[in-house]
Image 1 (cartoon, rainbow, N blue to C red):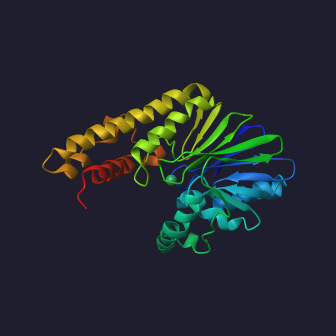
Image 2: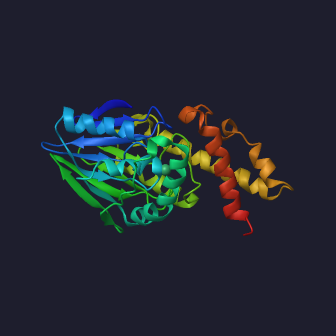
Image 3: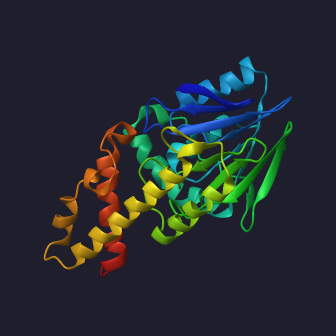
Length: 277
Ligand SMILES: [Zn+2]
């Protein structure tokens, strides 16, 4: 796990094990708020030790930006914390999340002791805020990568933890195309100093707009290829031949996961828009 200080009392933790997942913490006078966990217990426990043993600021609130395992599986290591999330996050973690954990446990012994813990403070419309020290964390609904996505805006510092609606390469297999674009378009108006994506590098103030435009352009390329595929005799074969670079994204993003995410995006969109189920 790599630790970085983003602003005073604001930390970013990036996984070195899986897909550069980001988690964060905002530290107050006596306690802290965590945003997401990392997938594997070792890395999440390293974060917990840093906050609780080194800084002596136990985690009072843990926000889940969405229900996906790589962000929420660490909930069970914080039994004293209030887990906060969108109402849909609670529902999805309770259903799809349990199945995903069972599958993952068959692949990885490290996850043996992990349990699903559901958010116990939920909201559905609008947003809520958490006050920690001198800071206000505003939880905002940013769906599109998943139906339950939320971001955490630190109002005073203009730092947004966006969850996976913003990643170095958009991933929409569990989400919705138009909704993601709507959510992305809300971000430039937040006047950010730093945008912490769900995975990968921190986006600095001067790059926010161009990175968002880059992701919207990529989504546009997906749409164009999926339409083209629908007129082909073998749409899937056509889609599998479209590489990620030709859609404006590097294949080395996210430890080389980009190409795989890209192909899954194309196939999922094709099935959603043209599939006959
Ligand atoms: Zn995700």
